[in-house]
Image (tube, rainbow, N blue to C red; front, side):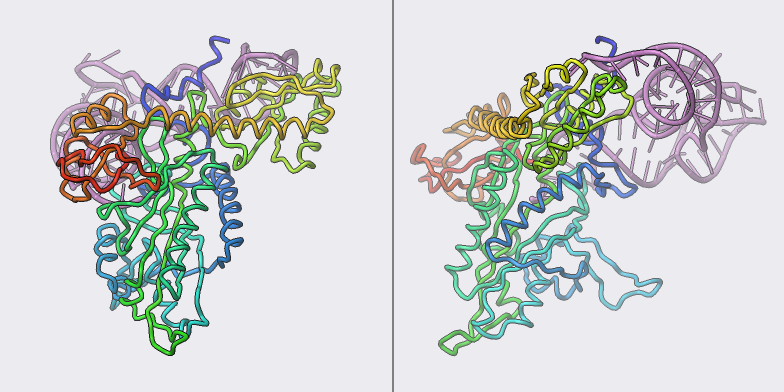
Length: 479
RNA sequence: CGGGGUGUAGCGCAGUUGGUAGCGCGCAUGGUUUGGGACCAUGAUGCCGCAGGUUCAAGUCCUGUCACUCCGACCA
């Protein structure tokens, strides 16, 4: 099949040009279509199904931890946005404004939400009077708009889908606990559902969210060894509450400002899935979120009994709760093999005349391309086992990439060399001064990704200035 | 917002010194095929990104503009 490669070869090799490979996969796997507006894309059924799976799992996790969904308006009056100083300054450069209603000039500009802190605050101010009204643990699924200058599918859109949790609590401890609980949920989700190992930690002052007291993050390593911030969780203290004048009467009959958190994960994570697991054949989706977990391919489907056997197999899989599909189009089997590999379907089952005779089918793993003959008896059970293996293997592979490409540096030069020759995450000690963070950005071309919760004392001195170090920080080139 | 690249059929591209648009894939119809991107026949599809200009004549030359894309700066 040498001449049969034409379409496959339209994907740029992953290690030849990673950026090109990425955009090839994103379009060829039918995830998105570009739209007329820069940075706004059409999420096609396959991408949206993936997002829905992500949504279902996360939403369930949120509900189990006592959160309720709400929906806030997509418009924010300028005066409301401006109430918290750091917050506006952080977002102002990328806010999209509405200035006209029909042909009438508006008396006040209206901002299209880049995030909804201000809306939640304004609402909380109205509904919270007493300690009995607390906590409120709200979440919303919505889209937000940030007028980015450069955009890339999933990684940086001008409009993107996400969820933003916003909670408000009577005490510091409770709010802090919430902040960490949600980070743990994201980490659990990434590792156990998306097969993406994470580094958990705190953002530096420079990298934290505009208006937050503390920002926590999970950082993932992509196949090209760059970092992707996959979700964040923020502790706001009472800063927003004070700016928005949210007060409640506590048990001791005094007026107090409550404490808030927010946390979010976006469709950006889909970019993360692609860049963590994909290979030269295209996408590779983790079984737990793959829109189609098993693709049944009939071989010589016009022959006696083949399509019936394929249908029966499909039904059996569906009945056992698997997301399975079959492709009965008149494309050649080889075309179908390549097509569903491109789309990252975790497992393919081939069933043809020979298999039917032997009461079996041929399973082909997307992760290893390994072919295994499976008995049709108990096929649902063996498929589930295989999917579990694939899920685990994908995590292990990603973990190996993370571990094998995490390095230690004791000087700026060493860090720069590692970044330039190998890429990856570099652990190094830091004195906590912004000037050193900026210098590392300038000289080693990295940004601080996080101060990991799991600290190691690599040395006593800051990698940059040599003064006493306060933390070990993970540095990397980031998306 | 700075630097590079690209805009011609759905996609990928060709189009010479300016002369009125082509190839491959895909698509449609019919037939033969089917265990790694099958084949034959027939057919449809274009405001050459957009706006000006030069010219008897512009896909081609000039000016402007817009979009996409990559690399930086900024951000999820």
